Figure (cartoon, one colour):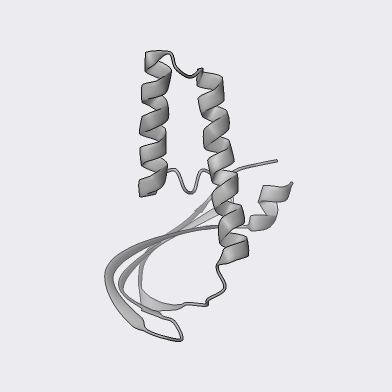
Length: 106
């Protein structure tokens, strides 16, 4: 099964990576087990978002840059407006990373 490392650059992903690095360096954890933990983290985040998030968001903004590499789209937006049923929020700069979830089950 393929995995994308989408969530490792989030705040929680960076903290997990730093903690695992410290544990590997101190000899508490093997490097192989640390890698398995990171892979499981990505799978768990994907599953949690698929099953727990039910709201829809519309996004409008100025598309500054876009690219497609290794089946992953990256969009850079400026002056974006996020709208849900309940509220709306203006954001100056946004980076959106998107991939085909069907690739995760292959």
